[in-house]
Picture 1 (cartoon, helix red, strand yellow):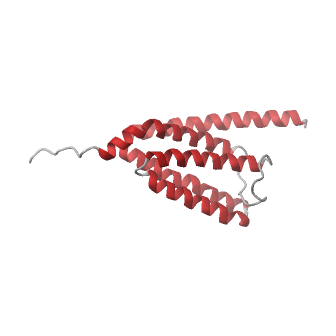
Picture 2 (cartoon, rainbow, N blue to C red):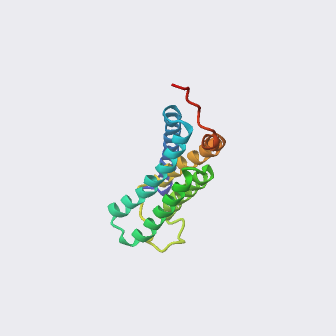
Picture 3 (cartoon, rainbow, N blue to C red):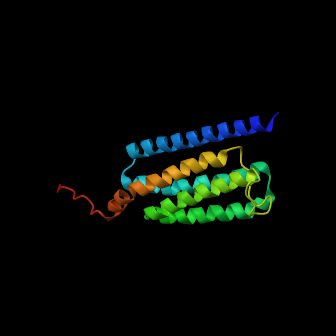
Length: 166
């Protein structure tokens, strides 16, 4: 098939995956705002950063890339540490989700030979346009965390509500 059709197909897939990532983030934001108080919402997003980072370990196992275990595991540990700080510090969540979005795009670019700072095989393979989907989600959640930072900080510093005497 002509290279132009291949590129057109790829562009359509990228646009669809980015749109789905943004819609997934919008859905997550809508649901978490409805069911969680500000502290719990911040805690949720902090803890959610761990499994989305660990998802790359599933790709390592699935694609059988033994050379990628060390680097991907180190990245998961870094994101887990950022997550722990993110429980109380919104800026850690902003940075963590933004960095994870870059990590996603790095995988996507390497998968297509557009970025080669790492030796071949040091990063795990990802399904077509997965990095685009995840980066769109991550950037949206980073922006949302930025928008909510004042309310999340206030929730941690507000005095507890007084309980009426029994």
